[in-house]
Image 1: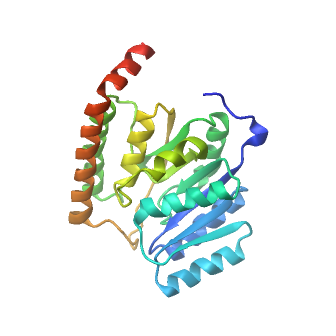
Image 2: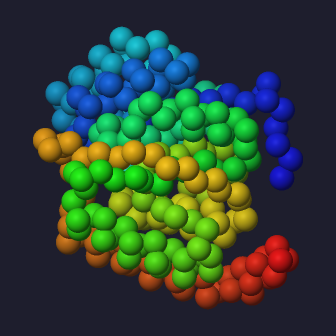
Length: 252
């Protein structure tokens, strides 16, 4: 794929927000301080939470607010943010979670990496400290195993880290077709990006879990939904097996 001229690249950030309104202020400010416009997506927060997000949008220049009157899930929020970013004329969207778990000092590195590889998806993979819940760490290992199966590749170290830079022209059409709009979204979009033959570059990022942090992960419901996503993706892999094998042989 031919890379667009650097003068035509235009970057913004997309932050899906649900129950992390207070933490999102620091994230939005860090992105703004690095020269990025910010698209905040209010994913059905309470009236009090919406008021906080409105104040952030009003206080920080070049910050835009997209509002869902009901919660659509992280995937639904990310898709709305990517659509708004494209509507505003941006070519790349740096999607980062609102909870502040990712090292905000790494923002310049990921933007620079995307500018160097503008046709690639630039994704973080987590470097955990001692605060990570063991259940989350083990769950990621299980998901990473199934992603290897679904993509016939071991080149994807993580599909659940909510810190990525998406080139909108190639990723947005894929995002719009995804059906799991909740916790399985991050997994499904990366597998489908791999199936589409879009390059992905991965870099580590420090991740910490605040002791008083708010988690939107529902252990039983979301694990069942993620399992269903993997089942669907495995079936999709079988249907695409000839194409995936041909690609692998062509690269050798």
